[in-house]
Length: 385
Image (cartoon, rainbow, N blue to C red; front, side, top):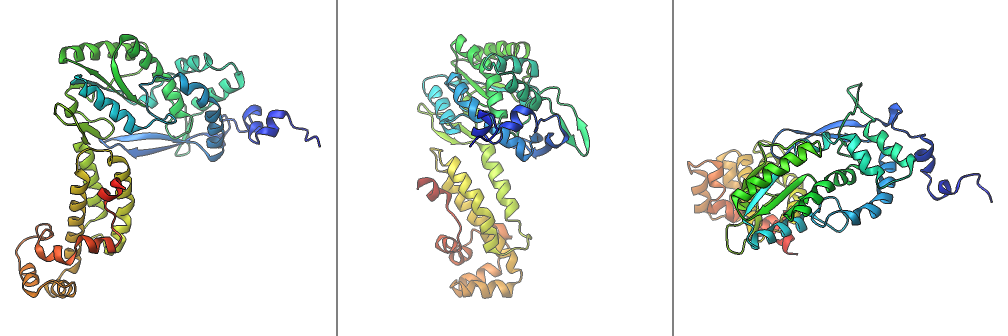
């Protein structure tokens, strides 16, 4: 029975919104909402969160364009691409170091997503798309603006992070950088706006840094953050949370900054005077431990085992503080089958809670097996599973 709809509308219920402009970003309901999240290295990252229907439309465009564009991107690009991952990027970087490229040009693009030139981006999109309706739609999303505390702000440059289409557009912009690096014959790895170029000497690295900075700022109209960019040994820099060891056969290990961020997060969840039960703390910790095991289990060192022990020590310290008085501490230690002499030595010790958390009394009271019974996950075991 005829439906009165055009063929593309029968296939896709969102087609009327896309092609007739009923859900155009020009209308107030479809401005993005600015959100800020903290960066790992300090400062704030700006996100532009689209509304629900905008996300659906952007996802529809992405699912149509990505299968066409992705095969044309460089094999050295790993970010936000189907079948590619951060682990593959880290492994390739490690392979270059193993081959003898013992200096890295670590390029940091200053606020890349906020400074993408719209005209250059749309020119590259137009070279791949002939449908003016899609071109118009993408342009409108780029220039839709944001509604910040009730006030409208224009979007004159940038591709807001937070929408499904943004990673594909960012890869399209930086594909020009990839092709230039390939033309020069460099060994490099790029994950989104994180780009590392591997060379054999510091002199070559400085030469590459100078020429690439000129190319990025002159041709791509982007800016290199010289304070964060550097030419250094690979084991002195981190890439996607990992670094490598200074050995003839370098091994992957977790970067010191990543370990410090993990400990800061655990400290926050296990604050001594947080006022929640041990079981609740463990429940709050487990998602962090599970995520860390899934990502940093790729390390070839045994940091996860050490961090598991450090996390358990934090929990023992919290329990000791929560027991408060000598009488309560003695009763709890005895209830947990700690010998009388050991319990007495602990409660009369002049040491503080953190030093006592590694004592024999607290280790006997809260063994690894007891923590497993309480539901605490082990990152080492999760990574090995």
